[in-house]
Length: 568
Image (cartoon, rainbow, N blue to C red; front, side, top):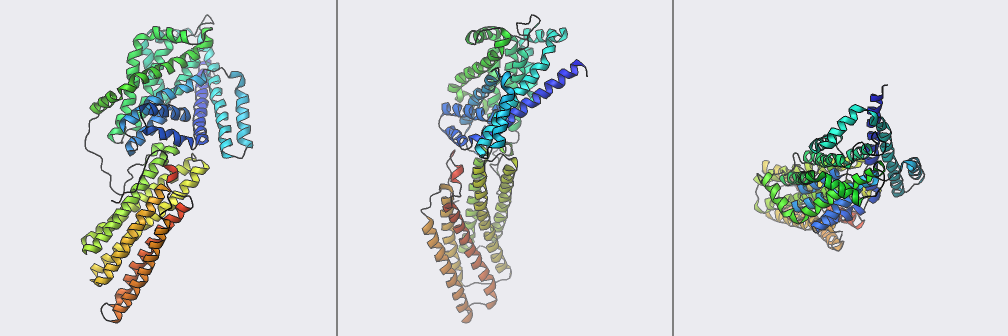
């Protein structure tokens, strides 16, 4: 194999190990952080400053500004945060992503293998899930530096190549060309952290004199600016097919980085001198990695400080670029909040699941009210609407369970999250059963109309009374599911007894009417079928109450935003 191919394969292999280590570290950090991620997300609704802090902390955990930006886009499209809040998250994400470069700047080449070994031993020997995640994080941290070391070792021969040094000289002398190179690198790799790691490693290679960097800080800064622009493409791709506010969030990310590039590109040499002044002193090839990390951090902190008081202006700009148009209307069978791009961030994804479950619960409650209205007005035409609504909510239920299955399959859930998620699937199945029972009663009423059955007025009044009790129970149980407050439990149990008593009374009354010739005997079976469905509805409500009393519900996932089930 010739030397050129060795360099190319070594660079690609080192980059692959680096990206694998970074992604693994991200996953393990996220699992190790577990419940702390919810606390970070809880900051989002407070104010722009806290939003910036939350964005920075989240990015430090996820090790990717793109992942945080995609999360913000998902939250905006789900209505969990507004546009100014999302913009503050993105400002913070740009600061958080600089932590990777700062970590890389440490010279840990002598300790790489011991770090990998320690991480392996912890993750292999310890049984605790949290300790395993910490061990795997350390292991991934070592892999990250192993990738950097591999890239560094294969880059050394490049310093003696006249063609390559001439090409680098051109990039160093023409800042716009450096920006284009950085943008292209990040577009290809889809990770600004990875391309900045390559840049740091490359800049640390000595030039012909063996002391100075072959690229120099002034040559590295334009490439760094290009890296920042390239990372915005991920956000733009994530916003495709999303609501307008999600697209505006992605555009805001672009504006932040492009405006920074346009501002700093004119002052590359003075900026390089400033960074050299505030950074550690020493031979250039020894300190340039830290200088690049500092340049990256200083750039993003400066631009954030400029834009924080101008978030209102950013909102106006993105609103002008993407004006309001026709609002997206979702059918009852479509998921409004679920975002497949967030499956890799379960703490955030579960927030969207909760939002969708609340919506599904409201739709079932609305359909139950519609069913009562059919009985009150004896409106046979609306029966078909009740049946259709029930079928729609079943489709929505199927989509939610598919999404939860994707979350389980991703392997990103902690043990606690997996336990609680299994619990909400159990509760959701009772909501779905309520919808299915609405459909069954609707079909029975439709059959009654088609076969021209006629129940007595007293039978219809009793049925309406029992369904009104069910409606009250259902919304009380749903509220318990959301708040975790079990104070209504006794009241719901008492209402269930009333429904059982009412069911027995309805059956007896029907038999008496049949005996007196006031009702036809052949109606006994369909009428009993409706009563049985009502009784099963009551059981569903009790199941929901039992689940909440057993510490299963949605409260666990609601640290970030407030929810309530509204009677539609």
